[in-house]
Length: 163
Image (cartoon, rainbow, N blue to C red; front, side, top):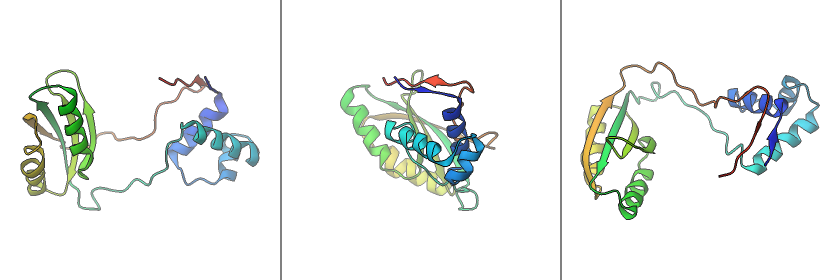
């Protein structure tokens, strides 16, 4: 098991805020010299702790105004049906998130589309045609109250787990 100290946590928090920060700026922020800071970042990348760096885009500016949560129930929860559904959903660009759930529905999808017509097309041309789907319920997000991508990290440090 790898332990992360407060400096590692500081590096991760700063990178979650802005992945474009230079190594020199990052080192200053966590009170390290640049080489040890760079080495820590590389070590966390090699561990797989830092999976990737992305750019977050403004969905409204891009015309993606309809944010919908869709509950999907399957006829049977057997491995083959689950795998096929997940593979089909993974191919759809409008599906932003997909979770296997407990409770009333088997899956919860977050779908982002430009308008109701595009949502209708997704549901009728893709979701309802996916073998095994038995029920679809949609809820529209009226307003995004909070959205974040940064994970909550403890200030003092933590031990990494590999399950």
